[in-house]
Image (cartoon, rainbow over all chains, first blue to last red; front, side, top):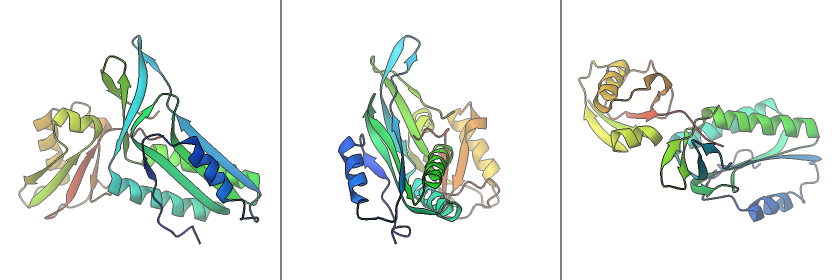
Length: 147
Length: 78
């Protein structure tokens, strides 16, 4: 069961759209699934004091983050009747407009897939020790804080 | 006791380093370690900083030789 397999979450740089397409294709053989829910986090070109965010440079306390991801997975599988779940998060630089978080949940029915996907996103944002440096065009930066 | 300290994000930038080892009296608590570190590196927004002991967020943990203590600024994943 892929529920128990340790998963590699961190991806260097942006998550390519092709990876997302390939993930969808990989599920075509699992015909007990009736619904997928996908969340994609994209880097927003925020304007702060007349300067535009060009990119975010992610770093993490990786050993702790891996443990947190594992706990979130365990908790998601006990709360929701999902068939499988995949999460990928960027490390390093991701430019505005590119994808930095990809959450993919699958279930027999839509409500469970959607609720589980939402659970993953909220838990990752609140509990994973990931840090983001927002880089501006003039080489200055500020540190992102999740709301 | 010797402890491994790690700093991340904004705190690594403020401290000017990502990790270091610190020697502490064995009776010293996590609260005492935080006081020393916050003062040394002038971490001014201490209420937003979380501290993990061996990858666990538990502020009441008793410190022991070889522990890894991480100082974490607000999370920004996603």
